[in-house]
Image 1: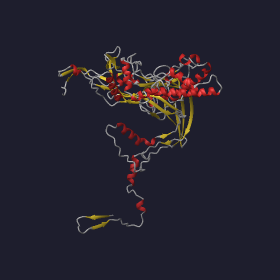
Image 2: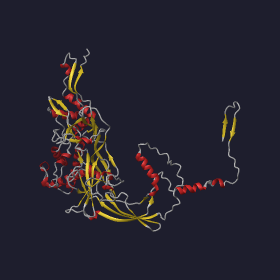
Image 3: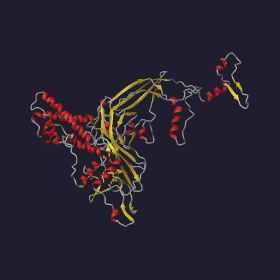
Image 4: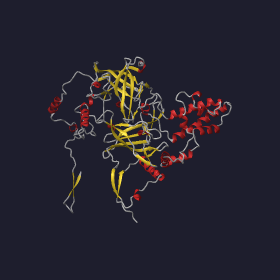
Length: 624
C-alpha cells in the first residue's frame, strides 16, 4: 500500500507498506491457536457444558388428531342452518341483496330476451305450434315490464326532488332517456315471480295473460333459466339465511358449530366481525349443546394417528445452537433497535434468542373448514425412550388471564376447558378482490355541535358504480335552485346593516345522529338518526340519506317507518368508516363467487360541520 507525504512540495515522496514473511511455513498461523486454554475450560464450566444428560434427539413423533367439520351456520338471529363448503364462509355471512340499479335491470332484461329466443328456437325446431314469434314476445314483456323515466310534468315537492336527483346525475339521465320504453326491466320481472316453486298455477296474472297454452312450458323453462342466471352471477342470500349485519353495531354477527364426540355440538361465535377476511381469530368458543332431536353426525368427526419425523424449528437470523459456533456475519444480533416502550418486541426477541433452538416442527395436515384437536403427542428419541408431551396451555380458555397463540378465546357462557390444543381453519376465501365501494360513509364526532355526523363520501350512481358524495350534493343543490330560485333576503332588508340568521345549513350528504337516552336509563345514551330540513315550495321536508347503510327504517318514498339507532360506543373519537361494494373470489373447485358486502374500519379523527345557530351577519352595501 502506498501513501503520499504532504509538505514536501515541490518534492513528492511516496512510501510503500507491504508485509514480509519471516517464516516459510504458515501452518501454525492458520491454526488460530488459543493461548489461554484454562480460560476456555472455565467458561465452558460456567455455562454448564460439562453437565451432560442421558438424553437423545427426537427421531419420531406420534400424535392423535381429532377433526370436526363445520356443519352449521347462523346469522345474527334465528336457528342454525346446514352449511356445506361449496361456497366460502364470507359469502354466506356477508352477502346482502345488491343494489337494484339501472345497469342490473338492463342486464337482466337483455338476458331475458336472449333466453326467450334460445328456448323459442328450440320450440320451433321441434315442430311446436303455434310458432314462437320473438317480436311478439318482446312487445308483450316490453308492455308489462318496461324501463320508465320519471315524468317531467310532476309539480309536487317529491317530483321536484326526483327531477333534481336525475338532473344531478347526467350519466344516469342519458341511460334512462335511451332506455325509456325501449328495454325490458329484468329485475321487475324477477320480483314478480313467486317465492316458492315456479309452476304455471303460481305465476301472477302479469305473466300468464296472453300466453298460449302450448307456450306454457316454454315460459316456465325460460323463467327458471333467468333465475339460475341471476343466482350464478350474484351470490344472493336465500330465504333460510338470517341477516348477519347488525345495523346498531355496524358490524357482522354470526356463529358456526362443529360436532362433538358425545353427540353434542360446540358453538363458535363471531360476535364482532367487521368484514374483510374471516380467520380463526374472528371466532370465540361458545356453548356446547346436545340436541336430542337432531344429534350430530358421527361421519363429520374423524380421528387419526400420524407418525412423523420432527425437525428443528428455524427462522432467519436464528442464533447457532452451539455456543462456540459463529453466526453468519450478515446477522447482527446485537443491533436490535427497540425503544423503552417496545415491550412486546423486546420480549419476543429475547424469547427467540434464548429459546429458539428448543422447538421442533411436526407437520400435521388439516382440511379446510375443520376444527382439529390434538389429543396427545408421544415423542421417541434415538435411545427408544418415549415421552408424552402435554399441552403447555391446557385449559387456558377457562382463565381469561392466560393467553395462547392460534387458540380460540372463550365467552362467559362458553364450555370452559372443552378443547385442548386445537386449531380452527375456517372455509374462507384465499384471496378476495374488492371492487370500488358503491357506498362509503364516515361517522365522526363534532364536539362543537354536540352531535355525530354520518358523511356520505361515495353514493351509488345508479349504473353499477359510484361517484363522490360531496360533488353529488353540490350538483343536487344547484338543480334545486334552478327548479325554485331562493328568495334573496337583501332585497327585503333595504338599508339594513345587520342580518339575523336562525341557523345555517350543511351539505345534504351530512346526516346528523343525535344523542338520546336509552329507554329506562338516565345516563346511558345512544345515537338516533335525525335529519336536516329542506325548504321547498313552502314546505319543510327532511333530508334523507342515499346510501343503504344509513337507510334502515326508511321506506322508498323517504318516509320513516321505524327510527334508526347506533350504539354510542361504536363511534369512538377517531370515528369509523363503513364501505359497501362487490367482492369476488375463486373457490378451491374453480367456482367464482360475487357478492355484495360491507366492511368497517377506523376513521381519521373528529370533524367540524360548521353548523351555527343565532348569528348576526353584516350586510355589505352593494356596489353601484
